[in-house]
Length: 309
Ligand code: UDP
Ligand code: MG
Image (cartoon, rainbow, N blue to C red; front, side, top):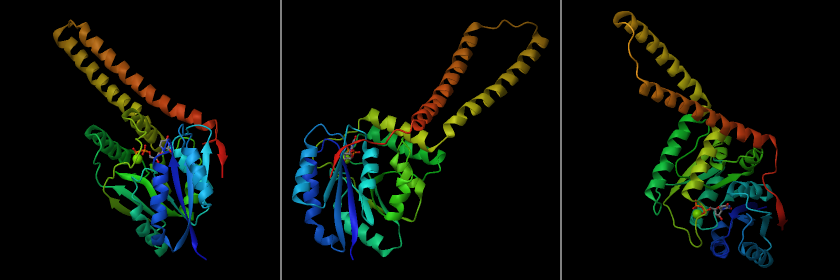
């Protein structure tokens, strides 16, 4: 019997891109003839006609399944729902805007079918068509992240990856609420092959990621996969103790040699501001972790379904 390949596609306000995506995959089915196909679209609370389009596709092709959320839960939740619904022996996660080139599917499939790798991942080798400031922050983020986290997070890695059932189950076993997929994929491990491609621009619609959203996403990623920022308070504290100790010695010696020195208040104000600033910063960092722990302990569902087929 042929193995089943599930294509998991999170969609948010993608009424234009969805039919183009389906058509593109449909046209290259001959190249994927060694497996049966299944589509799992996740409508992430779209406010346009995405759900209608998906229903249409389901009517025309019974291999098309969809899950529709009660509201927008974010791409990470969409991926989780898609993976839960997918029945395939192999599963591939793709963006609907064709920024994950479908032309790579046959190569990915043959690598997986060879049996040497459990997972075939992709990364962009450039960031063409993206504002330079965004690329700069992204690069810095990956650099810092890899230093302070045990999850292997690769610069330019996409969510576009094909994996075996083993890997899918491993990802599903991580039921955390704060889902940072790039971290989760790296954290589960398994033998992984990397394929590279050049950035492709979106086929229709527009990106859902503003700079600010990406910034929050980066902070969430760090909080989810590293506890290093929590040690900052201890580091700052130790340094300050050392400096204070040296200061005390200097002042005592100076007083003994030169008598009572006149000390200025401006330096005092600066020191107070600096130290209280550092204290607040560290408190804020701890707050971030506490907030995430708080949300995690509530054990809320990752997504809520309105309808599915
Ligand atoms: N997406 C989603 N929920 C969201 C935002 C995005 O399911 O809240 C989907 C979107 O429809 C697309 C994929 O995630 O299929 C990638 O989104 P986008 O193209 O906006 O991101 P970019 O490629 O610009 O990083
Ligand atoms: Mg995109």
